[in-house]
Every structure is written in C-alpha cells, then in structure tokens.
Image (cartoon, rainbow, N blue to C red; front, side):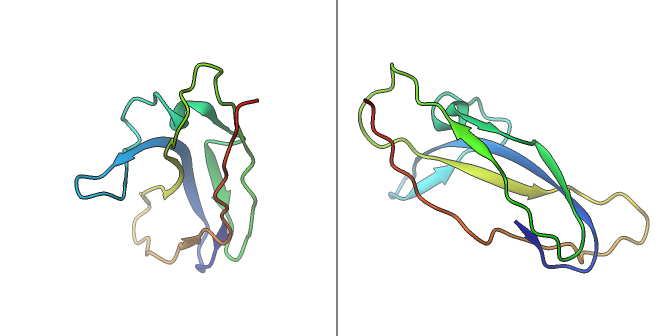
Length: 109
C-alpha cells in the first residue's frame, strides 16, 4: 500500500468472503459478515496500519486452505479501509493506493 496523500492516516485491514452477484461477477461481503470461506482462510500480519505521507508498506498474509475445502472456485478479498478521522478540521488528504496485487490459484495436494 502507498499513502499518496499529504497527511498520515490509519488503515483497517481484513479479509472477506465473496459471492457471485445477482447478474454474475463478484460481490464482496462487508466486514461484519461471517467468514466461512476464503475470508476465514486468510490470516493477516496486521489488522491496522498507520501510514505516513508517501509511505509504502507491504502487507504480509497467509492463506491456509482446509483439507475439507471442496474443489472449485472460492472467492474472497483483502480489504484496506481508511479509518474515519475524528480530529477537528481534518481534511481528506489521506489517500491509500494498493499498488500491487496478484491473483492466486491454490491446489490441494
């Protein structure tokens, strides 16, 4: 992640499950939804991160696919959500960009 803004800011990190949308495509569930699939298989190195202006950081995570997982596609996502500012006069100059991502395929052995 990169903070391309000119203010420091905090980011909440979490994994979520996804489902197939009503007209196809992926629909990512919200942070409060129970995690029973990919969202439950992912462990993040941190659940929050503070980024200074211009700071770039890598988020470590582990995916453990249970032996009971059924073959097929399993959808999920890692979410980086800016936390609301509470200080008076705070502007919105905190911008987080996810600069790199990779789609992974896992195979049970």
